[in-house]
Length: 274
Image 1 (cartoon, rainbow, N blue to C red):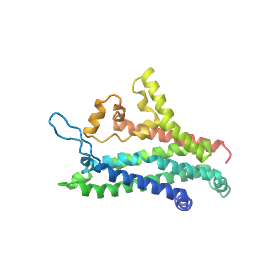
Image 2: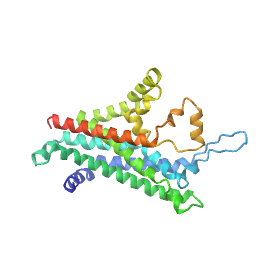
Image 3: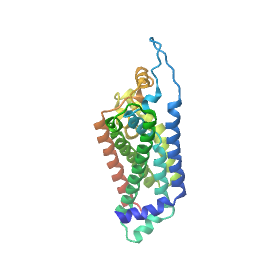
Image 4: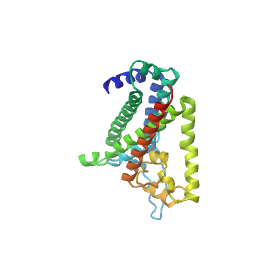
């Protein structure tokens, strides 16, 4: 394992595209969490009080839910990183060279999985650090239990990030072309699967779309509870943002999809010439 990690780290850390995308991911996340509490939303109700105070999302312990939710929205950057890393292996024939040098195809695949786990762990640590910083800035009157009682959302984010990247790895190994893999993943995630879910929900079975892979992966962390969430639930055209399966079922499904993506990728590598 350490041998694989050493080989991959040499290739990854010196790769300029990886550095740029990693900076873009961290910058986009930091910008979003910095600007969000400064926004002003005023919705007046019968008692003439504004209850849409966005800063409450940054109080301990809810900040772990909020920051995990925000970080997950930028996981497409992580998926693109993986596509470029895997695509380079085919573009420069390094997979083939590694096999000639004695590595098995399973080791090549497992090396990429190790990279995915390391990237997910690094981003989870980033969310943790920024969560502490912003939580201490915005929270008042908190206890030690308040600070860490919802920190399990970081674990949920970690699993979500891994799932997104393993899906991207499957696309990259299947298509062997960085640009095509990236375009097809984006089309499937943002256009094709949502259309399929919409059609099936309407004409086949209500809520069957909740079980599709990219819906499970991208919606694993629900919108944090707030007056805004209640507003979305009350609006039938927006309530898909708050629909979610039970957490344990989401976790089981995302782990199942990760296993499927891994096995499909493994079979493709085993059957094709490198």
